[in-house]
Image 1: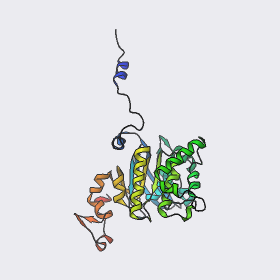
Image 2: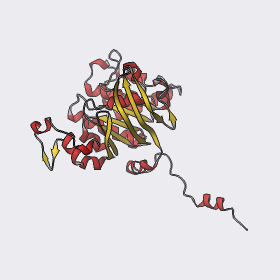
Image 3: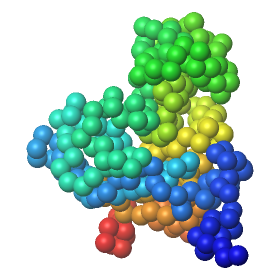
Image 4: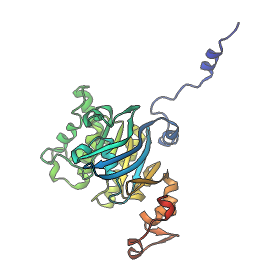
Length: 300
């Protein structure tokens, strides 16, 4: 009796693992081979029809991974995130070249609320909580676009409280009067309430004590590992970002000048010197680090 070759191949192929199976390390290791959930392809951004801010920026975020977007203040990190989330028009900016693809569809012409419904949401620099609302009311605003019923929203609220127990303690407090770290937790929790596939996280460590920064990054790592939420993380705290990211891009004057695995970037002498203040195994003084020149090959 003959067997059809295609049927034989199908029977021999291993069954795909269930969603969420395996350790976080296994999922992150497999991320590079997966189709990217977010792809920014050679975009240029212009403000006021004159000022060229981003100059051919390209990057990718695979499903279930954390990608760091590094660079000094003014390098173009926030502009890149706003280009992805379609918030440039409010600042008289626009994407003039290139494309932005999220979850298999070009989205740079879509409105911000459509992008949120598709699962891509930005946590803005400076947190931007609704200061006159309570913490819990702020969290509920993140579920505004959902249509799956109050029971599902309440379950996700309990999930947010499980990751941020401090928010549960302060849930009835006015958001404008809680600490900066609690406001950052509230902003991330609000993003989670929208059931995101990808979170664009802009400078989460800004203005926070080192202990709180460590705590927030730990939670980001847990959300990535346990909830399979992808993160594009714009951060000046290079050491902390590379500790939790798998891959990184370095922006300089609106261009991607370096990219690679997070571990390799952390060991790169240029990154050590320009962003960690360490050169050839010794820590540089402020006087040495204040004025420097990028190596010619850096911007080649």
